[in-house]
Length: 480
Image: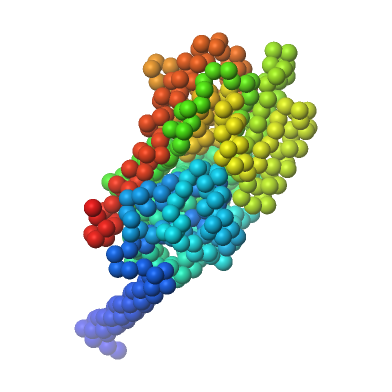
């Protein structure tokens, strides 16, 4: 039997051998990554002075607020860095680059330099699709698989995640040695989600079957807590963190512990062009803008509008509702079909219209005519459509929580530039108040609403702040 000194020596040699093996493998892998980066730059015909900035945004053609952030960020980088090339890791169902950029122009009125946009299509994007069970962890692990494919296809100088897949961060930073930026629209998990499970409240992310079972609720709560811990660990890997609202910043700083490197940068909104729309002579038209996703709670809009009509049918016989939004996939289109069924069942077929995947000109035509903008998502991280309402002179009626409450519909010149509500009944009451305002008061609210958002949430403000935030990560040769 070996003596204690001999045993200690054996342990030392084993640890030293394993350490040497680890360092050797790491050095080999870093050389592989360096070779990949060189090969990728060569394939894109980049020279030494060029910088390659990768955006992880597989659904880059979805047409929502997140996509507006993506394309405005690309435009900002291109304007600030003439030698910067923006690479987008996209799903393989995207159109050609020409068709994609034409769609971006039509939906957002954003034009970018096509020559400095590179599309890298991914075949593994299906791993990002929602699962029936354990969605959070399966999507998060799936995102690592997708990021692995992405980085093997193209290693950028800077990697910008604009979709919220934080579990990719350790892979990006520590395995591929790429500087990492996170623009967080909303936390993957929040205290509100945990509270709903703990209190056993049914919601779109907590089914009535789970809420009704103490055992299943307890299991899900444990699962959420473990996921929150892991989410906090991976989030720390980001070099620069940007968040889109006060609500999101509170959750991210609390979970990731990144307050020292977190900046609040509101999403961009085309407030300038919308300010040219007239404020008077609006129709009794209520509109909503947003992707057809479950959390947007379009069903609540139909319920609230039905209550409004039932209570004030004779007084508001000319009122109409237009539900405008984009669809990403078959599930979203199924939601539209289900929503149309709710409209028909409520007897509102002649008063409610669904407008799917409308181009920017069509959206603008609704914003010109509408009196009220309706938004029913609870804990909406921000709410770009609410900004668009206010800039266009459309009085907002939004949920009394998160972004709308903390950042957007806040007192201005001693008056609320809109209405907040929580239940269908409260929404119906708020809609009635907004639709029956005296003309002079309605114009004053519209004027204040427009003025309150014009500078805070403009494209120009976002572009300036976004470029300033990523500046420390750019190579020295790129600095002004």
